[in-house]
Length: 189
Image (cartoon, rainbow, N blue to C red):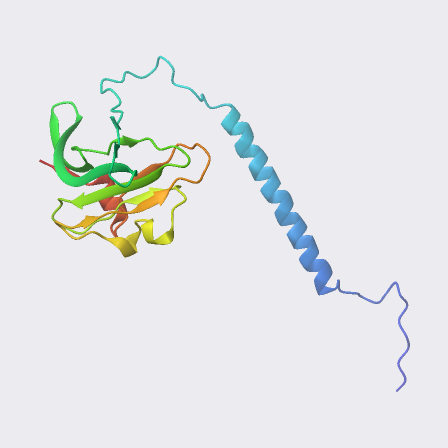
């Protein structure tokens, strides 16, 4: 039996897989753009400031400036003590907190480019902790990450020369697996 060729009009052609994938990706991209535009339009309609709408009763606590002492080696020396305390974060409610040189947070440290800095970190807490210089360009062995915990009663003295442009940075505890808890460490007194 001989087959008769079909005319191009009567032959059914399926699109190539690449064409199907391209079409689906294009439709997906269009869908994402439409959704993003919808969110952007909805966001535009939301009030973005609360000026005069909120009553703040608790003043913002700004950490005090800790002036360094120049030690016998000419280093700018800071003395930091990790310790427990109590803070009134909400009026009338005392909360057990952990801080540096105080009940909560830590003092502001001011350094200048070219300063040779030494920070004496003494752990007066009941468990190991650390201090990490967030954003400061320091040698890895001075970084204060999880690999450099200071045991209770222990002392660690990192030192470095400041070699970076002016910046607002911060430092925080960074013990392995417990960083957040050591940063927000609050519990009812």
